[in-house]
Amino acid sequence: MPYLLRVELPDVPGSLGRLASAIGVAGGDIEAIEIVEKRHDGTALDDVMLDTADGVMPDSIVSACNALDGVEVVWISRYVSGGLLLDLEAVEELTSEPSRALDRLIDLIPVTFRVDWACRVHRSHGVEYATAAAPAELGFLEIERPVCLELDDDDSETLYAGARVDGNRIVVVARRGGPEFLDSELARLGHLTGLAVSISGG
Image 1 (cartoon, rainbow, N blue to C red):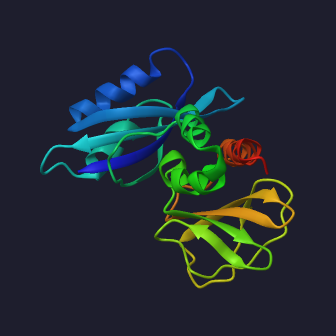
Image 2 (cartoon, rainbow, N blue to C red):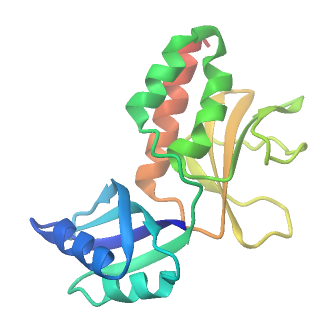
Image 3 (cartoon, helix red, strand yellow):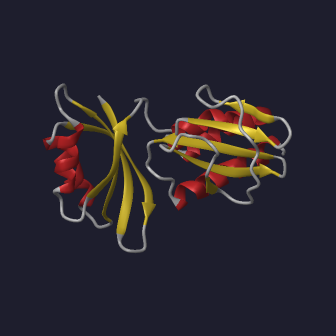
């Protein structure tokens, strides 16, 4: 069973090795690790994509990680396997067909940021391009920089973030159940959105 594990750990040599060993002993098989954020307090936040053997419960992996000195599991959830699409690979995809860069950005965001859906919203026309799980209707929001968003809906478990495309369009992404969007993720979202705009010619 594939899982995504977000873990906080000391940003010192050997930390990842100890984490990997603990996950392996608990029955997990690591597929990929991505550094999400390095903090000024000497800690790092990493996303670990892993698979588990039959009968292994995620709680046992969480317990094994939390037993390590200075390590805390922030979030764990089922994950659709398929590997990471890193930002550089996303940029390569965007440049492969410049005229469709803004649409391709929306297609790539769910994998790149591990969110449930993404869409582009126009000030007058509403949702103009979206992934399959996105709502058909969503209102435009005035934002100047990448930010966490609060939408008027009844779903308290879904977290939202957005980035400005231009004065009339924004990108909105959603992640159900967590983890919370980090400042580093918001910065990446804004950066990729800006690149897509440049590549597409606006």
